[in-house]
Picture 1 (cartoon, rainbow, N blue to C red):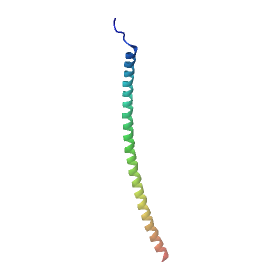
Picture 2: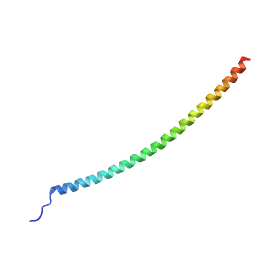
Picture 3: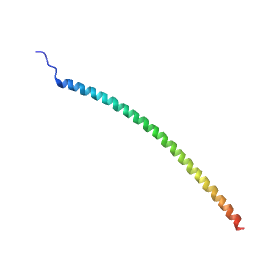
Length: 78
């Protein structure tokens, strides 16, 4: 009597195919996420640099303003 193909082996094959296609999709999603995260990290670094430059410029302007105010104050006293 020939051996019957069990329906469970067919089901296991279809599950294996579904899992492999699911893994491919997940792999592609993960690579897209990693690319997005890398781009965001670069943007955050650029923003941090800009903020640091802005803080430096504000500090210089405050210093120059205090010198100007001191000079004006000194000249008004006399």
